[in-house]
Length: 250
Figure 1: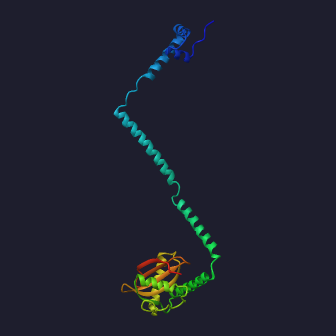
Figure 2: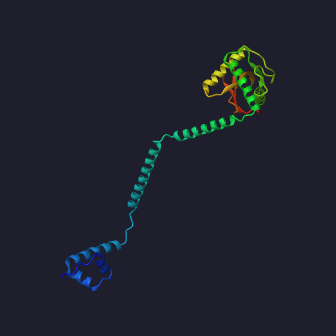
Figure 3: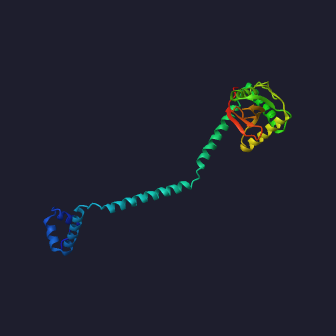
């Protein structure tokens, strides 16, 4: 009976000097096992041989290939990011913010005191009066006289005070003088501002004044208790001379 051929593990053990004598005898007499033993010996020699260092050219070529692969990965990522509209995340955040603001406003509106309600009604009356004088070409416009930044704030605060009544205000910074021409110029400047900024809130004060020696229009826009947007424009050409956001004390 022919003995079985040794396995690759047996032949590897023979190369390591750890095989049984029977394995060595069989490999010496069996052409097939002898050839297999030679193959395993060649593999062992190749694995054990030292690896030569790459040449400078080969190393540079390998680095260039790796960098090109990294650049391609970055380009694919950038293309994927561009496929998503960049405005989507800010728009979603803005929508959430608007919803929160509306919710807070609705939640707080029901608990307003009678004093706050009276202030709101007074502001509404001044808004209607200011819009009427600027929008319908009223026969007179308030004249706040010569103004600088400090006196402008005082005039705005006085006119937007909860105790102020619709119509001509008390004399401020030189007195209030009527003038149909000034009223028409102020109304024209309101239209110019609204054309430039359609989202302006309600007009709560429209008056004429003198600013840096030239005739000017004072236009104050406000929504609720938000800071007032105060514009001072030249009456001739409606060029903006001064702008600020001002929170009158309540």
